[in-house]
Image 1 (cartoon, rainbow, N blue to C red):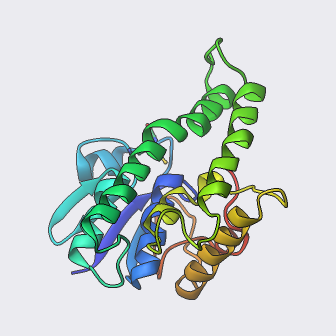
Image 2: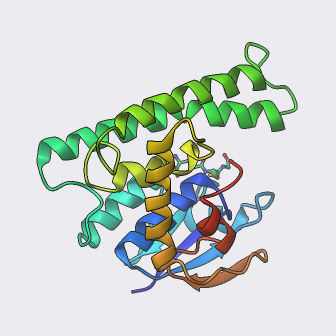
Length: 217
Ligand SMILES: N[C@@H](CCC(=O)N[C@@H](CS)C(=O)NCC(=O)O)C(=O)O
């Protein structure tokens, strides 16, 4: 049964699915969606957000749920550690990342694109908070190749939002380079970006993103 995924190219949540699929060596048929016309996504899933995965006759949305499903359906190679307590640590960290840390880039985007941005913060304040937070990731990578565990799950889920690291955060930079190697191994072809467009690729990562480790939010 083929895997089909609606996405907006370069969107962070869609890239989680692309990276997980790349890690597991799965083919995905990507359906690129026009951000201003979510009707195909709503028709498929009953809600407007991407990514949406169609697989085994099911429709799944919400990237953490999609990754959990991929892990269960295609357990090897694993995203999560086998040990239950290590597994719980990774899930706890990922939940923190989604609910707490990812608020910063989301609010930053709001400052940049919303007609009436939140007056209680600013691009400068949010940027400074993000730069300071990268130290947390640098510390988590002290003495190990991946965040939390040898599993790649936490790294895949946090990778893009922590990109932009510099010489002052060498462990983060090295970890991102390892992720790039993983995705480059499986993301050889670039998908079409026409809208809506369908393209099959190992991970669907646009070549520029695979090469550079991602760009904008
Ligand atoms: N929790 C969801 C969030 C999905 C989400 O916000 N997707 C963005 C693109 S990265 C989107 O479709 N935004 C459009 C909107 O909010 O209407 C996930 O992790 O998949």
